[in-house]
Length: 230
Image (cartoon, rainbow, N blue to C red; front, side, top):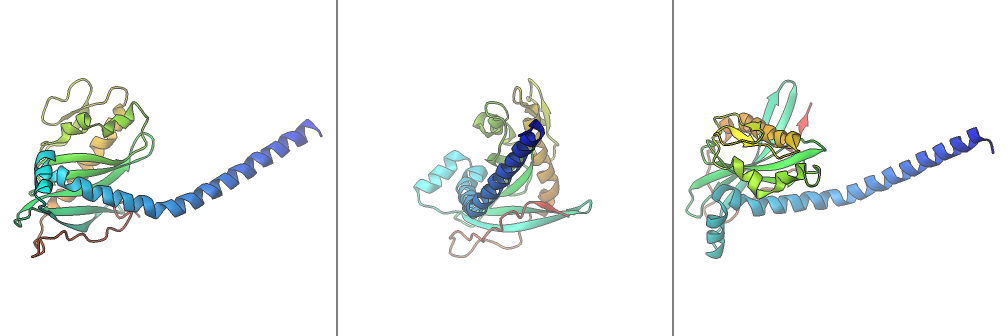
């Protein structure tokens, strides 16, 4: 066989293997997709009490078997020819007092999409917590956005300020200290937070209240509802 024919045969083999691998991967993703989304919703519901109340109060309520009322809704934002959807979880204390909101948001990171859960107080004036629901950033660098110490910087930040990422600082009210070696990931998360706050805080007002029986009222979330579409 000539060198040209040999190279051509190898090229076709590589193409065939790539096609087979891609088809197999697509099949796996199709099967696992619903499971992954269900797990994300389960994790979201588990994180909501901590994001709005803090670990201590959330643990105290759980120990006393007191249940928060949680309702979900979708906020639609139309901007620059696109529509973006945010899933918002409104949270009430057992006594019926509105205590805060958790917003599911996403945006582009350094490697892939980053999904966040952003906790806000009842008035939407202050950040009460931040959790990274999904990310594929570089291990040991950008993946540090998952760490409590870094995410903790966002807590109690005013939503009236646009947050800025700085290197070797972050002491001011509107500053977030960048992760060393992962400035892009740091800016990506901060950008998602800023955009989410700008889009949803004016629409957080809730006209209804918790259910009379104070049990969790959790509506089914539509997977992918916080994605942009043209």
